[in-house]
Image 1 (tube, each protein chain N blue to C red):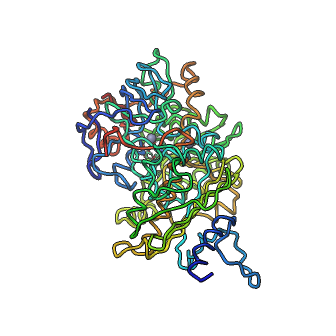
Image 2 (image 1 turned 135 degrees about the vertical axis):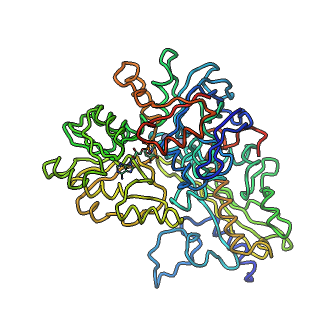
Image 3 (image 1 turned 180 degrees about the horizontal axis):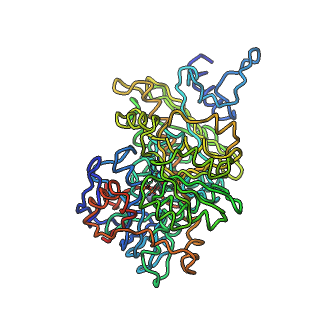
Amino acid sequence: MRAATFQGKGHIEVRQMPDPKIVNPRDAIVEVTSTAICGSDLHLYDGVIPGVEKDDILGHEFMGRVVDVGRESTLTIGQRVVVPFTIFCGQCFQCADQRYSACDNSCPVENQQVAEKAFGYPLAGMFGYSHLTGGYAGGQAELVRVPYSDVIPQIVPDDIPDDRLLFLSDILPTGWMAALNAEIEPGDTIAVWGCGPVGLFSILSAFHQGAGRVIAIDGVPGRLAMAEGLGAEPVNFHETDILDGLMQMTGGVGPDAVIDAIGMESHGFSIDNIADRIKQTVGMGQDRAHVLRQAILACRKGGRVSVPGVYGGKADLFPLGALMQKGLQLRTGQTHVRRYTEELLDMIERDVIDPSFLISHRLPLDDAARGYRNFRDHQDDWIKVVMQP
Amino acid sequence: MNLANWARYGLAATLATAAGGVLMIRRPTHANHDAAPARSARHARRFGDYRVTGATVSIRATPEQILDCWQSDPQLWRDLEYLPIPEGNQPDLLLPSAELRAMASRPLLIRIVTRREGELIAWASEGDDHADMHGRMRLHDNGAKGIAVEVIMAVRPRDFASTLKTEAMMAEALKLGILRDLRRMKMLIETGEIATARMRPDAA
Ligand SMILES: NC(=O)c1ccc[n+]([C@@H]2O[C@H](COP(=O)([O-])OP(=O)(O)OC[C@H]3O[C@@H](n4cnc5c(N)ncnc54)[C@H](O)[C@@H]3O)[C@@H](O)[C@H]2O)c1
Ligand SMILES: [Zn+2]
Ligand SMILES: [Zn+2]
């Protein structure tokens, strides 16, 4: 089969790889019909997440049709599924409480050690997301081996096009969980940093969950315009002093909750961000946490901080004092995708949400390298890239 | 009882009977306010001449299911690194895994010395010209998290460390290996399979 593979920092190549086969009894093989590039993939592409090896197959946002099943799979051949990016067993203590991205069993023991050293415990498995999360082959490929196929995939109806369903695999539930983690009360003012796909779906979700106002912060006009289209009030960080701006926009109170939908690759020329960038470049630090610092400072006293943006290291200059002294709540995590897919699918079926507005580019899988490059370098109009194998 | 014998039988008895912080000799006169198990001690993870390592996992299953998997699931056996296997045919012997045998510089014969139904299996090696190791698996209730399964292994370094593997490396390999073995067992019992990222049955 053909698959988008990592060949080194900034180097993606579509290569011929061996077809996956059933390995464990609960496996299924899915033939991919659509797959997307995620902001998280850019962290791999830019080499800021360790544990990616040459020839690793990338991609964790995909859907398709079942073409083979193991003897314990409950899927049937031909069924159409969206596959959540977090791999989980469904049976451990964590899964029993739907904390799927904390599954105890889905990361192969051979790949647990690095994360265990860095984070205290091994992580759950993920598709196409480095050996820290299991070393599983990803979905930017013609075929994918899907473990625990009796619990992970979301079965979807045949009469809804891929474009409206694909984002159930990650970013729609991620935006949804980001808003839930902000514990929105009716009428609240929410500030969202980042108008990439995750930020935009966080804005959409915040309104659905009762926010009165959403303030959207980014530096890319095209993306800010999309946020505005969703009803948010756009603020360009190149032109506005964010802390000052938010203070004025909220009558001196500050936002009730803040959402960092950017993570470890914050842009901008603030002093802390320049220092972080240098550290990241020379390998002395992993996270450019400028946005998280800013969001914590901006949040009103007693407010909530929700962090869907991905971090991997030990950010310094972390405003611990502001967090503690203002009595903020901090909630974060890789998304427990499957916990939310039924509810969100129902909203898609009822036309309450149509996530396809996000798609800016459709490419054949063979153009993956171009997709990655432009999604990173031309953010103004490359909002979301969907590829067909 | 001479010292060597004490170390040998005393250790087996200690491993077999005691709970929690067993391996630390308690000195009530200057109490060490530390409820952590002795094998997590910062300094000497030792007991007499023995190097002590171990690991714990919690498994959502009954003690019977856990022991049954350990004693009779060939799929688990195939993947075990250092945990010896209680094999059904010889009820009082444990089979050392291939890795454990390869690590030992002398032959290894392991006999079960204590068995408390659904709770504990303790073992000790036999023969003066054989590699010397003791260990036990203990199960106890861990509420909603399942049954906590704890394995402790105590080995005499001169029989397991080598010029290639120093004592510290040997102890680290054992500790990690036991942890991985227990996690494999947890996967197999809870999910019916052992997680793998391989794309094909025949792949490395
Ligand atoms: N928690 C999860 O499970 C999960 C799932 C998917 C994605 N993510 C993470 O969410 C984050 C966003 O993903 P995405 O796909 O939207 O990425 P993206 O790269 O497309 O979007 C990031 C946006 O942040 C903006 N930005 C950068 N620096 C900024 C600054 N200083 N102030 C304001 N805006 C700034 C960029 O202009 C861009 O529009 C990434 O870190 C990604 O890894 C997390
Ligand atoms: Zn993603
Ligand atoms: Zn699980």
